[in-house]
Length: 338
Ligand SMILES: [Zn+2]
Image: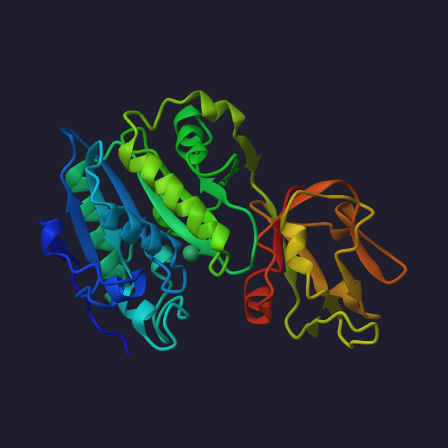
């Protein structure tokens, strides 16, 4: 099923039925929406996109909270809520996209010739028509973890935007068709991963960050930008097809790679070379592969096996380690700094 959808314009916030919860609010939206809020300074506009992925609710929760508060933003605000249908398909907020559809956050480059491409193009045209001074795209990670930004540019302005939410910014040369790849001088753009979709902390990060983004006089110049650390081009730890991946704390749990049920804790702080990442089966190490922007890298340069356990060779940062085997197998187990 691949149904075409138009972006609905909502120009009058008083016409919105906010309901008693973010879920009720999203349920009453007619589909993908662009919501316009007039600011105190009507000559400037900031744009915010969220729910490109239907299972990542923190951005919607924060928008609902902001609208409920009734505050006027400092500049005009263009708020885009994208995958309403995927989000409202039962069980709610569980579908990244509907079955058979492309990932909307891979559709912001040609060809725009299917329903997701057309919606992405409408979003792009709407944003460029309003010439925002900055654009944020709000997401959640699939696993639990701290917030971080992702951008193609680590300059002062991108770090200032990131600092509204977190002090970690991943700067990537990878191009996948994501919205944040459109960042340019006119419109600095940052993706914010607020933390896991079920982490209460992620809602707090999104709520406070979005409030600062909409209500601050300046968002592109801030001394807080100096506290943001840039991580350039993290590498990926990928698993070979058919890898038997298991999440268990039982000492005899079978598999090529056995991760603890508490493995998401590795997403926080620095990983030391003394801290095991996973237990490996006899063939486990051979099932792993390290890839980066310039292709495959030698696994041994980054990881080693001691007593049947996988360790990093040097202190590193892990990002987005996932507890979902389908994501670990089809995408990657985690990102890390080489
Ligand atoms: Zn996402």
